[in-house]
Length: 114
Image (cartoon, rainbow, N blue to C red):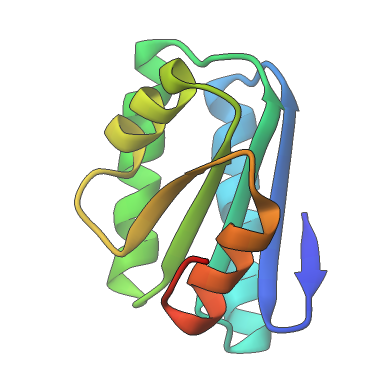
């Protein structure tokens, strides 16, 4: 978890539990509050595909972010993870992007992809 300029970057590696997802979400929310940020990049290129229960747990957390007006890019390695990300992030200002960090940053910061 960290900052890159005004962008909050959450890199996820390996597998996570629901408790770890909740902790990570609290860290993202804390950084948003501390920085007045409105953009989050979830880099899940090295994450194990989550269970459906974990995916649905993230959806509840995603709603918290949307209520704050946050724009989210999710950087994914494959179609399976992309599908799960779409389930996890539901209806909101987000975009799933395959393997292209520059495109994710461009979309977050300028509202467009290359």
